[in-house]
Amino acid sequence: MGELTDDAQQPSSRRLARVVTAGFLGTTVEYYDFFIYGTAAALVFPKVFFPELGSAAGTAASFATFGVAFIARPVGGVVFGHIGDRVGRKTTLIATLLLMGIATVSIGAIPDGRAIGIWAPILLVVLRFVQGFAIGGEWASAALFVGEYAPTKKRALFALSPTLGTSAGLLLATLTFLLTGLSMSTETFLDWGWRLPFIASIVLVLVGLFVRLGIAETPVFRAAAQRQAETRAAKSPFSEMLRHQWREVILASGAVIMWLAFFYMGAVYLTNYGTGHLGFSRNAMLTINLIGVFFNIVGSVAGALLADHFGRRKVIGAANGFAIVWAFVMFPLADTGGAAAMVLAVGITLFVVGIASGTTTAFLPEIFRTSYRSTATGVSYNIGSVIGGAIPPILAAPILAAHGSVGLSIMMAVIAVVAALSVYALRETAGVSLDDDEKSATIGETPVAHS
Image (cartoon, rainbow, N blue to C red; front, side, top):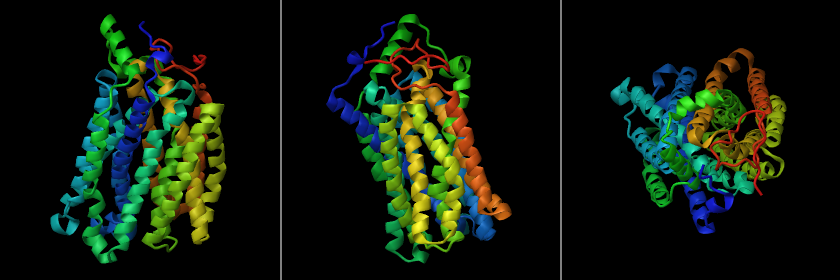
């Protein structure tokens, strides 16, 4: 089969450092682009693009455009997953970064609704779809790229770089909006100041492209491509995924919905909730979010370290169990109206997210075979993103109006229960080889550990 051994595929420390840096910086740029939209959707877009709808309806419409990206994500996951499995992981990383940058800068240049009427929200939706299409291929490709280079026993720790890039992207997006808002009046910020974080993305994209263009394709992919060339057995990654591991795709999608839901509710929805319902100023909520991101980073590192030591399922399972309980604490804590309470509500929520997401970057790729790993990881993650990331913020406003914050707590708890059951149904993957295309990672099989 031409299987690579762990020693044969082990890159030099210098190359591994470049791979980790590329995974971190590229994902930081892409998620900065993705999250500045979320921040703007909570604080700016209801007034700029939907002023005629009023506060409540404008907010709902703004979050609906935010959710458009999640519809595009599974499509992007399939398309870029196919490219990643057939052409290479590196090609996908470069394409997604470039596409995201173009869409983000274009959003910053859209005239508001007063200037071009209905075309403003239409262009906003189209460009948000492009953002979602690009991000649909980014996370899986970055996770695979680093994971296929990483040492087996420390895979979760090394594969953490895209997760930390996600957190850094949120941190950078929040900080950019905070500094922009502090440097100008509210009227100026709403008039044109909000556009600066979007247009500034072009600088970050160029840096990310420079780093990613300088790295080589993963040894695991090169070995798999060679096997396919020798056997002339290249098949559709998507059809092979459905044929061999469709159950794992469903379960993997369910396994990520807790931390995705808690992430977007904690980092995006609570921003609007704090300013719209609890009376916090825009800058106060952005500052709270900054503190929350640091909680998230600490949780991510802890999750990765624990996953390498105790295994993936135990760590994610523990995070899901805590999230079920925390769902009934998060909103009542925020409802007290105190700044310290809101810091804890956001911070602990994002810490729990970090524990689970810091483990997932290694867990999901380990579940699937090399020949369709990019496609399956991308599809699983992005289906989970739709269920966990898009739906809860959209449902939050009507649930809050009908049932109060207790309704939000019940919704979040149900999501965490589904995630816990999905993780329980999957097998442990710590120590599994990513080199061998024949050793499938299916339910009930024993992982192949390497010393």
